[in-house]
Image 1 (cartoon, rainbow, N blue to C red):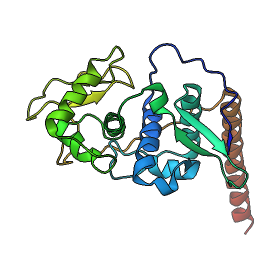
Image 2 (cartoon, rainbow, N blue to C red):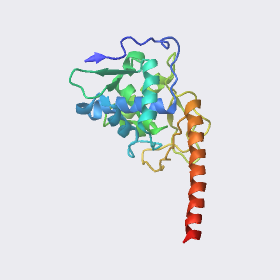
Image 3 (cartoon, helix red, strand yellow):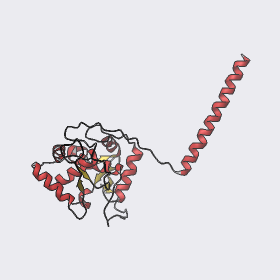
Image 4 (cartoon, rainbow, N blue to C red):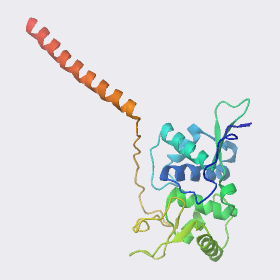
Length: 239
């Protein structure tokens, strides 16, 4: 297989890597699918779009298109967190993550971070249960100790949020997407999955030239509608 990223310039080796919400979803999906569906991994763009838009094991639920996922992949490749490659018999370029190269943590820690990227803030017990489908899990106390370790690194990867009103336990949040908002833990999904996921609509930002062409096309359509209405009126009068 040919590594299509072998000549890419790395501008993000130094300093902590910060992801946007779409990059986190894509990276989390790649980490997840590596262990849950190894026969399909690495993933094609189409498979990755489907993984990002899953309605189960996702919070919030998203409705992403190929363009949005491809853009996130390009950004992750520039941050050296994803690799694209193709082989002689490959029908499409496929993608795999490089998370462990940038963040060398044990498999359970990697699974926990993927779950936090895919589902949002969770309790230790919730994370332990959700990670069982990806990797062998330790006792609850060991999971808590691992999360504490991840929070005390020189580059902290997680943080324990303050317990919110109505919650029995505090929740953990990943820091790969930056500092959490003050109310991020308030609606986080717990072990019972009671919170209903919010569907996210992603808006594409078009280049200025494309925006101008779209405006011109809309104006032409409006003019044609007016002319069609006049023609119908004239034909009606003639009849």
